[in-house]
Amino acid sequence: MDNRQSNNHVDELKSRLHQFLEKLESIEPETTDLDDIDQLIDLIDELENQMNKLKKDQ
Image 1: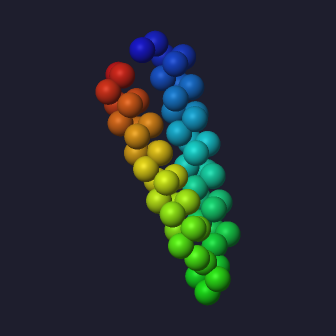
Image 2 (image 1 turned 120 degrees about the vertical axis):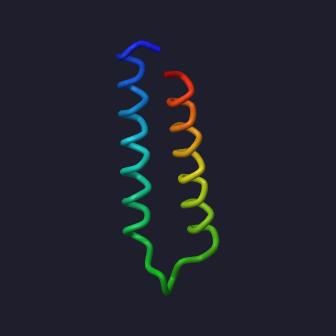
């Protein structure tokens, strides 16, 4: 994998992490339902998969 592709993947990971953090900050514990938690778990899984792919490709 060349540096440009690697940089693109890192930028994509940063963007997804930022989305996750925004979602996490917007959640109100008193009103959060299981769907919200499932979305957060899905985002974490996606980030983990992208990170593993990036590691594997380097």
